[in-house]
Image 1 (tube, rainbow, N blue to C red):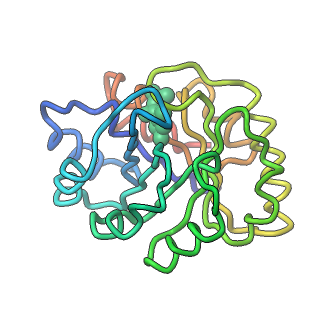
Image 2: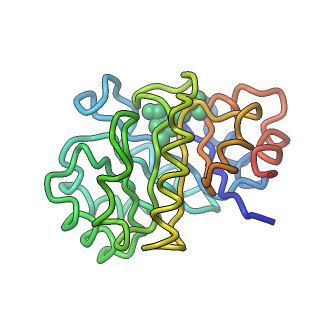
Length: 217
Ligand code: DX5
Ligand code: ZN
């Protein structure tokens, strides 16, 4: 059976009681903590930064999957390694020298991810694909939780999986935005093997059960 990496997005967690939600994830079948970092420039929202991540790191018993929605992410690679990031994802649209940035992330001992906004074609990744561990396909316009899944993303996932079969068969294809228990199966069947879910997990009556369902194929 296909192993699906499920990463709940802490953006939708209860910030008045983070420990409770962190414990829930620790005790669930979830695989990673997805942390959305927004700078108010690359995206029209500001989320949280190092002080919050440092606290999450102290309690989290699973890898930290950090999604940087910031301009010039190369400025902070060492700091994210120190903060405990295991996977560091930068946006294609935010990196002038993406190849160098990817090498720096890997040299710092983290897995390197590259994210695409909904309008960015997966074909643009052809030359960098062999170098990276993960592609994060944004299936909503980044900046906010709780938006609807953009259907066109399914075609992008399938196209990327075909490209990866040729040049990087172990590539993780992660999908982020509007993922829920009504669409997770078609996303996986299109070729994704990692899902991010914020409101679908934290807005549900039984988050642990929802995590279990989202991981099932
Ligand atoms: C959006 C973030 C997502 C977001 C997902 O910019 O990258 O990780 O938290 O939230 P949902 O699952 O509610 O769409
Ligand atoms: Zn995200």
